[in-house]
Amino acid sequence: MIEIVETGPFNTVQDLGRPGYRDIGVSASGAMDPLAMRIGNILVGNEEGAAGIEVQTFPFSLRFGRRTVFAVTGADGDPILDRLELLPWCAYTAEAGQVLELKHPPTLARAYVSIGGGLDVPSVMGSRSTSLRGSFGGNAGRPFVKGDRIALGDCANFAPVPANGLAVIEPAVALRDVFPDLVDGALPVRALPGGEHALFPNDGDAFWSQTWKISSRSDRTGYRLSGEPIKPTASVEMRSHGIVPGVIQVPPGGEPIVQMSDANTAGGYPKIAGVIECDLWRLGQARIGSRLRFLRSTHAEARAVEQAVARYVEDVRTTSEMVKRALKAMA
Image 1: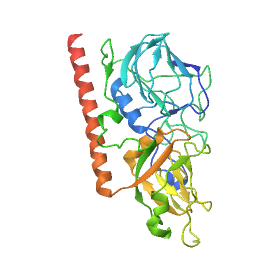
Image 2 (image 1 turned 180 degrees about the vertical axis):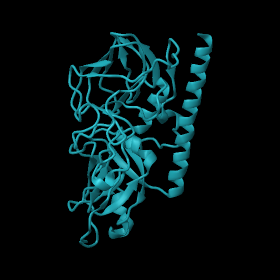
Image 3 (image 1 turned 90 degrees about the vertical axis):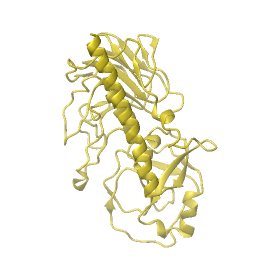
Image 4 (image 1 turned 90 degrees about the horizontal axis):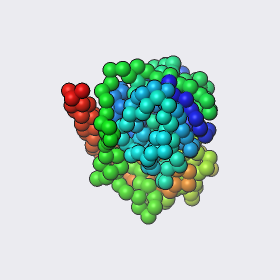
């Protein structure tokens, strides 16, 4: 059991989402930074898709009701356990009664708390993720409030972690050759031309060449971008079509919307581009007011990035399991 001691709005239970139900109008939901959630779960010995906590409003704190293993991944900034600063991207053991605190991170948007055994909330359509728009899943379909108590899954057979923690190199550092740095303060986001890209003049130059800003009207459903409006060459009446996270639509006002984890399941706005899947975690860590530049990518590049991320995750899993086996043998 854990108890929520302090929280802001929109902090929720998430896992890797509930794909497969978009045809009946149910979005996948899931972590905005799925890579951080996967690594956190590996560090504490869970399956990658175990339910954890997504924190996007700070400060946040919880009290552990039993001895367990936990890790904080995602946002930069040091988690605090009973006033002792710890490393992020590192698994530790917490004792019953200890309090974990997360303060506002310096630059990134979201932190993830993974706990041994995962959060034991009901599974709805194969997922424990919270759907805020549908008011189901997770913690009774709503964000956390102070005093909430959440059960944990069984972690009796999990291997211990070293007394000084079990850490990994965060993906932004380990994969710096794969994910480009900020350019003049703007986050580069790779995307492929979308289904209606040809409707925009000069091969979509106005979209690809300018710097966009994430508007305050953004949320887990979509990031609305502010910039010089872009318009198709002619008005086109379109039927609604399926939408997935990463799709970039252009409404009549000309300022694009990037669909995110709680993406609409269908929409009729022209699709100028789609963010490659492996860049979505970086976009999920971008704050309101952040600046973006879209880089025109290729399917081959998207596949190469996917393979690099897969190698990183597998290396984390292999190393973590090796350390835990060694600790078991020593016990």
